[in-house]
Image (cartoon, rainbow, N blue to C red; front, side):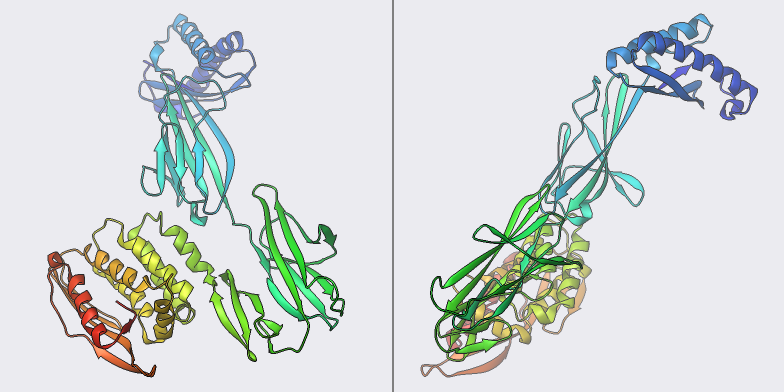
Length: 519
């Protein structure tokens, strides 16, 4: 609480041990205590009376369990009456009440977080809240953006990331009351149910002990079941908590050719998450056998878990004596997080640099993965769609990422992408992302060189020199690799350099039916 009185402020009122402070504090505290005790049911005490300059500003704290605007207004009017009777020149319309509130809130990673600025008591306040967020020990203003949506009393933090955790402050202002609310936000990780065996084939005539392992990353009740029967499991703690059940096969071929096991994680806040393991039994000789997919007969399908730090699964078919990969859905967890962040990042420069760093650190995994390359192309497309003036450093970071995607090491991966109807557009999507990003360039003069791309930007002109690998397919289905170096060309930005680049690609394609990548 605070109010102003037209008295002369002296420095002695800042010293709680001075006689001036002690005398005035006693008079004001007595008046406040009397007024609030007579007016407010549930009043407990007045504390921390202090003074500031500006005539004399009196600040004090009220402890009570009964707060509302009408009661506070009536009590403050009585404070003024008592002090005026004692010849103090109290400014009656200067009374202000400030209510502080604090609460905790958590939200699941990737969800939208909705925060509301609502006082816990009946205050007559405005219907527009202002919001701040604590950054490096200071609260900074929040305004509506790609990341934040503000409507009346509500703040929506779009697509919550780990970095969105922390303290948020909202403020509401009325005629005589202010409300300051602190909301402490924790971001919960997305629950993971990771199985060591998604689908495995086993010979039905052989007795096997199969280790079924289910690892989770959050607290909750985790159980293995088979036909609704809860199975005994052992628990090991680490970065993940793993539940292991050892299943003994029957060693005979009668009955069901498939056993289904379900690992169920029940979380207190986010619901139920499940993973399913299928053991498929076959009768006959083993044709394929390796550590990743296990054993199988001709045409058997097996599904294996991804390597560490990946999400998804990989599938193979037994052909001859080898497991042939059919589908690899394993994506790096870091790339998955970048995909989420790409839709709502706020700092253009920082995000481009972060993408570059992640790609460089994981380039040997990325160039051999269709899933990761497609994901990164999508991320680059999101980056290029954000209105911005691109600097030399931002263009360098962007092209360093592209450089890895179109490197010679990624050649076979691009061939796989181009042969697949669902991913064949990835190369043109990458070209479009580069074109759009180049259109964001400033008019500064600068030069950039990467291992694959040599570019020179001179006040609106783009010079590109790209090494591309193409594969010629002849009528006898033989193939040979040809390396072609593009001639330098100089289209003006206004003339859309992509159209010339596409013409070059098409002219190459007349002789070489497919470029890798087709960009």
